Length: 414
Image (cartoon, rainbow, N blue to C red):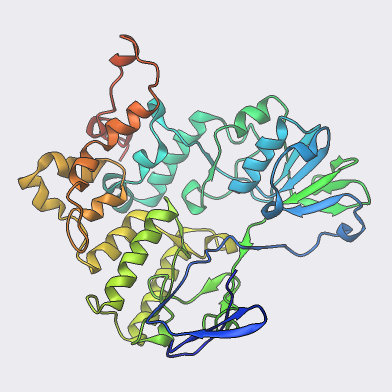
């Protein structure tokens, strides 16, 4: 493992520890790609936690379920990791409990007719609907659809906040495990005893073997100027476009990649950030001056604070469609939808209604790919056929969803 020991502000060089010696190398630019799921976050200890004689771990250290055969486990938190771990353990442990302060809305990985959820919600059409319709109506419609999957109140999960005010918990199996009693939902922990966990409603789980904290992560950058160059406070950090420390302007040759929490996939955004960084470093794209950078940071933060619950989990939120299009436009890689409606309507339809696959941004601009159009047009069929491994006259009657009619039907309340 290489650890950056110290950065010089002009990025003239960086120092590494190697077998106890310091080695210096010079670089034109530096990318920090350590993500934000590396430092486990532990909340303030609950009363009596220090006296608890069972095992306490963070979800970061969970590896496999077989160590928990016939054990009683309490999982604290109900984010994606907590949900996955609880489901995993529910098939092998004696008892599994999830403790949640606020509850959550649960989103499945597949939507109507087995369509992958990204194909339904991460596209330009749905983005336009969310932008034009009032937020109360969007939340009401969305929550109504989620409640059709299962009644969140009946299952002890329904929160006070609206569905779009939090980063969704994605889990296909959680409702089924709750209804068969393999997972039991509990309120927040009140206190620990030597062997038990007592909850705020007065109920107690006795003889607990393990408590798993699924309480998220923190992030810091101590490898760079001892954390002073990119300071982090309560999981908030000032980075222009979630990438650039403003104080390094106008050099802009150090950037952070993947320090985002999108409503969508992280990896395509990380690739787009890397492309953007290379265009800036090569001088093909100019960034604004430091004051404009700072104003932009505050503006983005205000937008996300208005939309999401105020907590550590939502400090890095970005909207996948908006953010990808924004970076792509700045480097000349955003597809011109209006142009394609006249010159290539089939492609335009795909760009509007299908999932926002990253090769949309290889149609034009730097490092365009000649195969991008064919890849986009075949995307729905490839995804559809991937699961149809048994082909008979009956199964071959099924065809991909016509997204235009499907979306019109799905969004008719708007």
